[in-house]
Length: 283
Image (cartoon, rainbow, N blue to C red; front, side):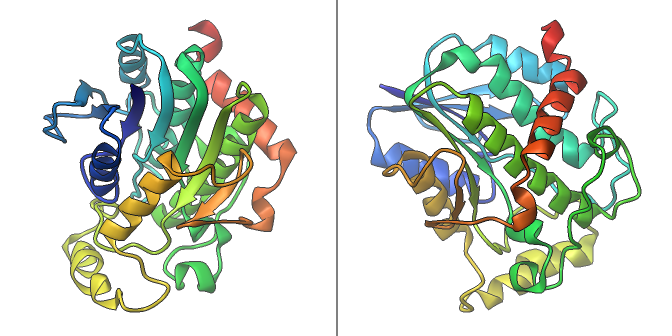
């Protein structure tokens, strides 16, 4: 029996990814973290109610998981209109959910991961900050002191999103240096994938463009679809080992992420700051 823990399985690319994982492996048990309801009605799915915008809730989720885990799929993430909203703990919402919640959940479950195991966190090629990767829709990331990024700041919402996805790469690289032998960590990016719930904080016009207009561009090579991206995420989680731990998976291929994403000093600064901000040392 293989047991995976997954966040973000109720919508976007997460739902088809979860369905593909369950269909491909009859021995798979999936533990899903969701804010409410039952995102997947399946006999091999266990739902734990939890909110990644609350570190207390993240701790409560981890406390309910007692069995060994062969993997973690950190697919939950969001993009806000501004970088001024906060989580229950006072952190900037994008950074709190996209980075700190994944960090804390993994650290709390550290002793549960067994080899062969795989941790996959969904990233974004918006971290490149160039037209080729984001079609001019997302500002480039603006890295600075982690404490400043983790609290409300003056970045635009999309820029804060790109910065948080750069932080995901730093987190994955730091994990790869620390995880036990046989447990790998990867960043997965689906590329430009309209039609998800990512921009649900946008106004009505923005949501209409994202869910109704951009999907019409799916014939373009740069545009992915929700179902295809879900299948690619499932392959990153449960397919053949894609590459060395710490690798960046672009849809189906291991590639180099941005030059800025390879900075061990920043990676270690993020790790230490996340430990302090989440109070992990006191847990």
